[in-house]
Amino acid sequence: MIDVRPRKQLGAFRNDWLDSRFHFSFADYRDPTRMGWGGLRVWNDDRIQAQTGFDMHPHRDMEIVTYVRTGAITHRNNLGNHGRTEAGDVQVMSAGTGIVHAEHNLEEEDTTLFQIWIFPDRDGHKPGWATRQFPKGASAGKLVTLASGRDDDRAAGALPIHADARVLGATLRAGETVHHRLGAGRKAYLVPAAGSVTVNGVELGTGDGAAIADEAELAIAASNDAEIVLVDVA
Image 1: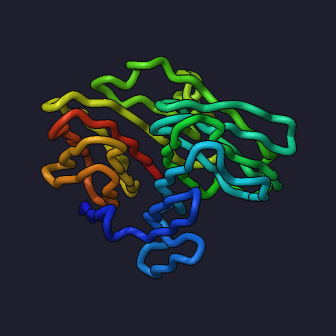
Image 2: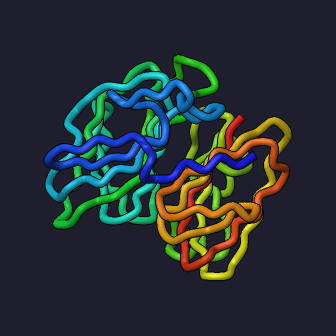
Image 3: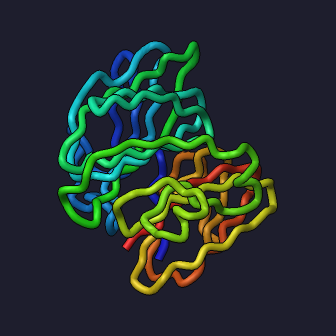
């Protein structure tokens, strides 16, 4: 089953500095049929204007993964962490018992990013933050695990999260295909960050979402040059 959620039908929010699309219920957007997908709770597609951003605010008991598509985001939190994550790179924040943070676009251009929230395997983890500069081109023509709750993925360089989940990304040339196996009972959610793809023959354009279940293997083929992000969850 592959349920396509076209970008034009997603929840939306816009003010003078932020333009967001919500794949699932978030803030004032409520859809009882879109409260999450397995362990995935939030997938927001944000455009943040230059020299603006989210001021300090709290979270707890959630794994938050930020995938920067263009520009860069600068993070600061009450644990003393401070860092900049640029296009193609990823940061993770384990809110755990509580964290207060800010995310600002300090660049001279708009920043676009995916903000992905995943339920933790339990409440009460120690809060933390990490970012990684993935080598440019590492995801060319193959899926690369960006963040994961699996020991083998973390040993290979994926950022750690406290969840039975994996966040993967790839860049594909037109005509290239990558495959991903879903374990029994697992679900996936896939969004092209750029370009368009087919997933087991189902078409997706830039920013469209695909909620996937009961598919043993995914064949993801690029209709044109594309960049994709995929979350595999229980």
